[in-house]
Length: 163
Image (cartoon, rainbow, N blue to C red; front, top):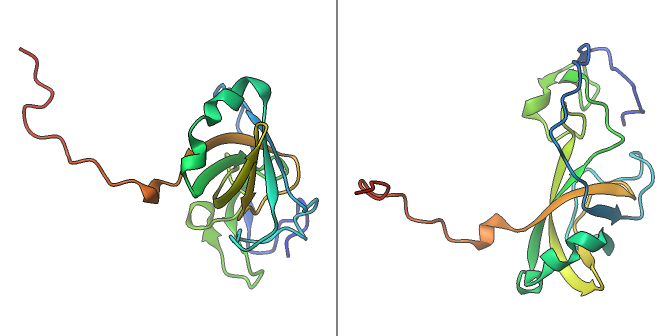
């Protein structure tokens, strides 16, 4: 298991570049039973513990209609993750993989995603199962699970022509 700020023998970090603000806004916080990466599951499970997604007041109206979906995709900011590793050794066995070939929380932009089962809604709070993040993780976005949608037909020649 990785300890905070540990760099294993086969891993490599880079000098962190100057920050550029993308204008990201957190829209709430996620409540889970885990306060340490050592406790947190590697992947969420829909039979896992009931967790809460507390959506901040100004964004609660955006939940209208969400009860129609049984599964949601939740995007969150992994606020306690390293951001400087480009090669990682998840098993600490001397073998490395590039960060973009892993689902590790250690990323340049530590955005986590989980597909969760929606269990209920209480006053701007979603009750869900399937998360794998720490308690008080900042919430970025919520979307219906994309696998619930039928893809749109590709545009046909002439669809975008104007007369």
